[in-house]
Image (tube, rainbow, N blue to C red; front, side, top):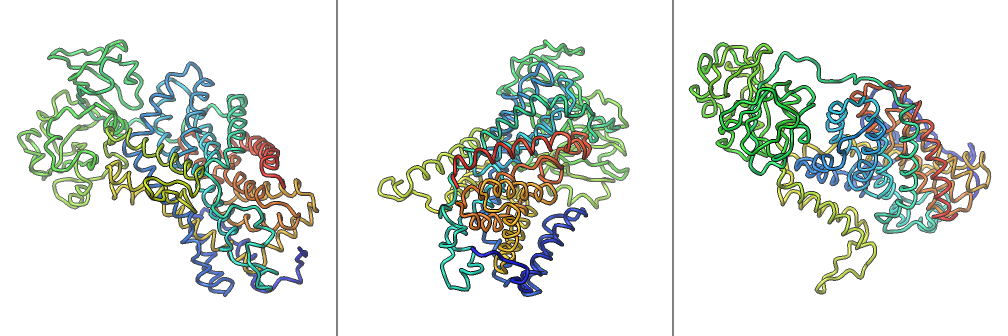
Length: 640
């Protein structure tokens, strides 16, 4: 393929590169959200005539983007049923030291992230790991970065582990089938883009579920080993910047141990109720007797009444423990199913009609269709059963009610302040195994479909998933999550991260501008001008280019923008496109040196109490180590 020089570029190519450079600069130097900046870049290309409306909107039909959106629904089902917490309780255990705690954390996090979106995994595990670290007196800063890194490394092990893999896989399918559009000489000659050297050896059906595993697992093992060896030295010993502080709203909450509670027969220590964050077990009422000084060896029995005192964040966590129910039987008289309720805080005003009456005599549930499960009053403990508490103006009530309560009562004269607590819906614990079974079934279906191909027939019906098997299997799994009640349609809609989907769609539009104007061929020519015809050196340069873009902007944008350049580089050095496609996938998925390169790094920034330099200190060596591992293995598995 002939080199492309400056004189060969037209005005559209210059405008495309200028807009992409502008987008990079804004993302690096400002705090604007990636989706907003990328959409602005696509809009500029469209207004200046660099791309057509169809090309600008082509990202909205990306199978990768749709698959990512569907996986958010699946992750919602697992979270709503408490599936991840159920696994975490059985896997994390009781560590003997910080190093052992990290070892217990890395493997299960990486394993779960291989089959669930790693962003969702980190979001679900942050509160669990935070509480786990505090319970066993481990600095949380020793665990939060390893949590993020393990999720990133695990995400590289399968096609569905991270949105980046799905997006790059979608690009592979488009190039292999000619959907990406002809560029340069092929377009001028009217040839088929599938004959373009850049698409050589790319599978028309995309990668298999475990195709990336061949390089992802070795990289994950190397990365986890590095964290175990170097983590204790390179990670800071620092308290969290965001923590539960002293709160004057100390609630007194009574919980009943249900007969089917998995904690029955366990000691307080074994049940994890001894070193709770922000809340303590004040006493146990059993058969009319009060156990005031609760020993860690005390064993829980069915129908025990546990009295906790603590701040609202911890009370919400207690509310989600399987088998612990609010002591008041009023919660069972509410109209809606418990899984559809939430917790709401409301401050009683002096004009509230129940002021001066007990909660029972004021008929609070009948009046508001809400049940008081705890009361906070100036930080003091109210040593009465919920129904016997006489309400006063200024009392803060913790209510179990429907989500619409906050909207209907926000302007009521009965309450000074009404606010719904985020993520306070009780998990559907009885559905946890169903949700996990759906995940396993989805993975099995994709795997069998890939192995059997078009020969997968049952009773004469063709059950092969054909092209885009991951999209079809994930849509089926998401439907089962809704049908079986693992998550509600409302929760599914609420938990779809639309900013991620818009980022993917806009990044595809920008990449399209580089392709159709020939700018990607010019950039590839610049890369090969530095590396010459050496295939392995070119592979390393593409990896490092993708990695730098990932660390500075966002992994999805980096993957989509560098992919067409990588394909052109592969053609220019007369190499198969597969190793270059896999390199882009790995480099865009494995950014460790900055908190902005990957969203999970940013998610643990506050909870871990980190500084920017903390990521550089441990992330740069890990970046280089994974780079060396990947570019060594990839040519062996996918030869040039």
